[in-house]
Image (tube, rainbow, N blue to C red; front, top):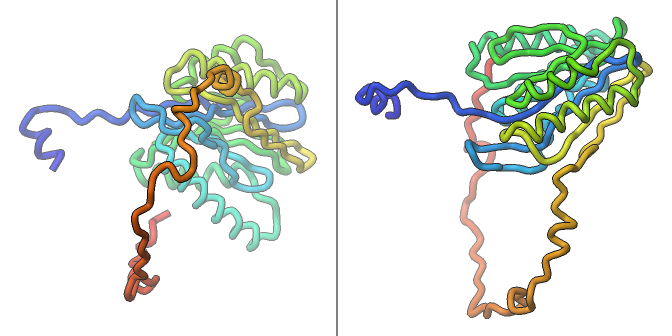
Length: 261
């Protein structure tokens, strides 16, 4: 229906603009990933504390930019495939394996899955960071940024990154890069999440590592009058009736179509 209307008006459909700042970098003993927490629906902020760092394996995490549903479902599918592969091979997942599965899936859908990813982790070959575009192209880099705030974040990396940084220096650099995206890109905002994956097998996921836009103290300064506070029972309940459904819906009524992966 939409295409028929467009054909009559000679208007080319415009892709929905998404907003995010995600980054990843390699340091001396592992990988640090970072992401902001703003989810947008067009020009509106839909979620202020969205989690954009997704679990793939104990040693692999992935930041997602683009369509939130696509990044969530894509990482879930790959996470399950990696788990099955580990059960079959009896060995730890490798980052290049996760990258290959992701790029093949995204290329198969020719960019229709709006998932721009920063993949990071540590395996027997050392720490790795990959950037994966929605069409399936990839790149292995010491540091990378993606999303609408990527240029602001990249300016921080280009200025301050150096080889063999310590963990504290790497985490601080990732935080500064994400904050650059938060304050210079309208599609990015709220808080900064970080994820540290170390070569010794440990990991540390920090939600709200930086909260530059905390509105708690500001709201605490506002005193509302008692007239605006409605006590319990202010609205009278005239009657209440519960009617259980007859028959209902069972799983037998649901048709499940398997997604091609």
